[in-house]
Amino acid sequence: MFSLHIDTARSWRGGQNQVLLTVLGLRAMGHRAMLVAHPDGELRRRAEEGLELVPLAPGHELDLKAAWRLSRVIQRVGPDLVHAHDPHGVAMASMALSMVTRTTVPKLVVSRRVDFRLKRNSFSRWKYRQVDLFISSSDAIRDLMWRSVGLFRTRDGLRDAVSALEAAYESERARAAATTTPDVEGFRRFNLITVASLIARAALRREESRGAHFREDFPERDDLHWKVHVFDQRDPP
Image (cartoon, rainbow, N blue to C red; front, side):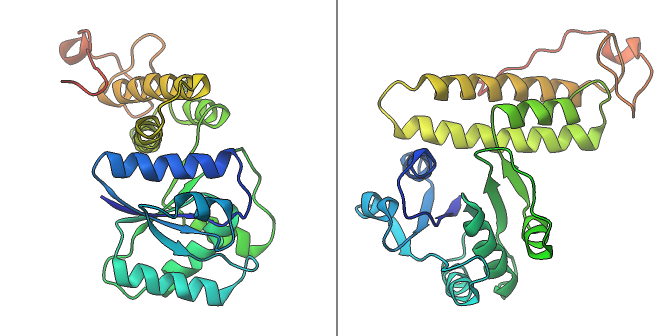
């Protein structure tokens, strides 16, 4: 897999550290990962050695010139997906992808580091409509589980939940591969995502309703096919 990651911040905080660990972790796992970072930012300085690096950041949210330059990079290198890690990165990536003329346009993935409400302006709503997948953790994972894997379950909702959780799992695994120091919060996130993913996958597989498990698309109990124990595991050998 070839992914292009975007973080436009000039400062160095936890978010930028996560971006660097994600990119390094993906590369350690054998994937190609390119980074787009602020030309004068700390992330660019720390990532300068050993990474495919594009120094680029928008001057403002509607910076068409920066979006055009990014679109030329995407057109030239052809990543499988573009992963934006901050709101200005989402804006630049959304506009850039709308300018790409390749037959296959990369998917747009966005990390949500905190819960947020969308702004009311039309551009903010437009840019988030271009997103194919959000990656989040903690409270947002809880909200996802309640919304899609809660009391009333459907195939479409469960599939969306499984897809989002699998992407979050791969992101956390990449970060873990890139760090050598214990990270209690990282372990907590990893365990949370692992358990949530197993629950969602089991609920999607069981096409019946039984006990606390209720499928709106399969509302009846089916002893003929599903009076069994279901065994699943994460990363089987």
